[in-house]
Length: 308
Image 1 (cartoon, rainbow, N blue to C red):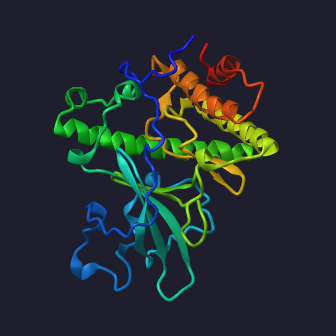
Image 2 (image 1 turned 180 degrees about the horizontal axis):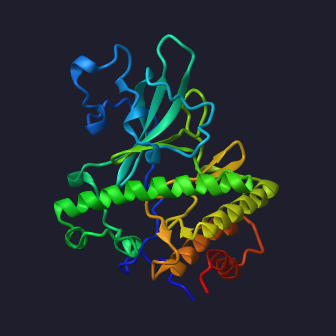
């Protein structure tokens, strides 16, 4: 019924085991737009002042802000290292803290790479349905000029933040949390809730978990709930697999959503929904879970999305 390996360009998109493999906490002070403050204005402790006040109200996470989140303007950001490297972006561990107090929190800083180092090689199908008003910008995006690639990079970051924002809101209304809290967006840097331990150990991906039969069934039920929340927001993850789902204290959390697809406006929306379901169902089936009907679940999700 659907093309399971569809990527919008007809290319095989089977994920290799080492795709986006994490490199935990390698110390790395990468200079970029977010770390090039005037030397005279750098804090005595930390790599930069908190960027909280640099994001506008629409670029901050949903209210009410969580109690754990440090929003004080006197806070500083301390970079601790790389959590994960990817094709389009790298994720860093950042501690945001108010000096001489116990107010601090850990954040995941997802930074999309500069144009010459990005590999936006699989964006064609995902970007269908995303347009900007200026025709010259659309042409630049279509031709992948330097300017066009910068616009696309901004779209990836903005699309991910927007999706996380909406999924957090809808999930909260339904009493479930299926994504990390989106703290703020500044240019092409996203600051997100860090999912892991207080000492900086990241939560494992689903692919790393070895659940027993009862745990496996519970995780599948959680995943169906998460997919339903996505459907009610009329979006598909677009690249869902056991490698971009974290398991924190027995709870599933979806990550890596820059390629979210508007199921209604994208002409291939139904295929993306089906592929997401097919990919994750295959992981659960391979571990012994029975009774999964990929076609029926896809139809249910499309109905939730309002797609006939």
